[in-house]
Image 1 (tube, helix red, strand yellow):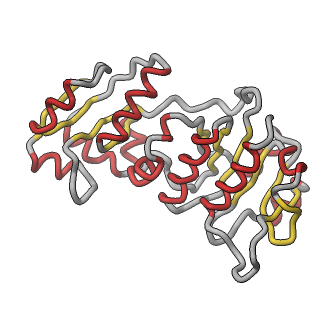
Image 2: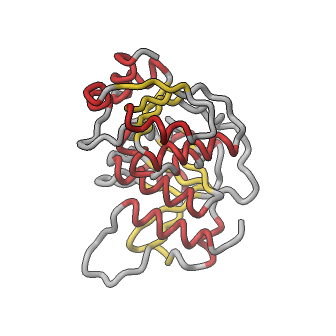
Image 3: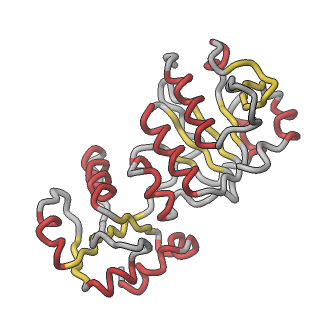
Amino acid sequence: MKLDDAKKLHQKKYRTQFGHYLVEGEHLILELQKALKARAEKRRVTLYITEAQQEWASQLDVDFQQVVLNDKQMAQLSDTKTPQGMIACVPLPDLIDQATSLHQGERCIYLHEVQDPGNLGTIIRTLAWFGRFRLLLSPNSVDPFNSKVVRASMGAIFHLPIELDVELTDLSQRFSRFAYLDLDGSKVNSPEFAEYHCYLFGNEARGVPSEALKAFNADAFTIAGCGSIDSLNLASSVGICAYQLSLVKG
């Protein structure tokens, strides 16, 4: 890919058009290498590096095509204030077929129109940590291949199965039991919380549309707190629920 095209990958429309996204920094590139080796993938990755990072790049044991940039070019490609001098241009992963059967014990977390890149990145990192989760994202959600999401995930995005543009109204064709969070629900540490097929989490401000919850006959659960505030951060809520579900073998 030409450098001028790679610079455009900070915008979703160009990531879609060119079928690539950017991964910046030593930790993320090493995580990418680990994921590619684990899956024995032969994806054509271009690694842009500065001259100062050539020795570091020479120690990688994955066949990245390396392109040396000067500091000015690297600064133009990077979207961070202090570029580390290494950015990978990576093919977008193959979309997961929604008809693909879940793996043994795999649970589905559905996010409806999540908007904050930091929240989504943290959720991806949390679900990958516990394992046996699949993430479903609705249309109008922040792009998981946004560079801010990729950074916030700390490389977990390479390890978590993600489905994109999953319509809320289509979920009833795949799942029969739904759970969501509400202050008046049963406690998430009850045994019943682990018995559902899909866990619904809504937009940071609006939550899951009430008409959908009624249509699904979804059951409400709550994270017990002291009661002095009325809500938790979305990423924190998903994290607590994922922990509770991880305690029960699926």
